[in-house]
Image (tube, rainbow, N blue to C red):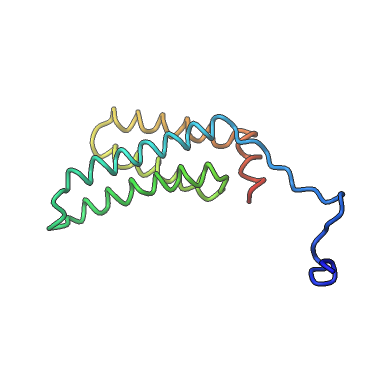
Length: 133
């Protein structure tokens, strides 16, 4: 009866769920780092901007960038390839912003960007993100 109504369903024992690659520890650590940094940055800047009126445009920009970090962390944990690229764009944006402050900050953020690139493009990380694309 069930097979007649839903011919697409495979109810035999040979049906297997697709296996997923385990998440590399480097992706987990970077994702959690992005979550923590984004949430802490948002909390700090939102508290600094209290009371909300008048809303300054720089506060909206900073809070948006902070929320983007949280989004990157959540969706990298879920294996979305676009989140990996958004994370690298987020770090590159921070390199550009820090270059306006001092050479030391730019060097530190550039080092972090290089570490992120290395960890997110290792073979295990590439396989993890490719399996979910």
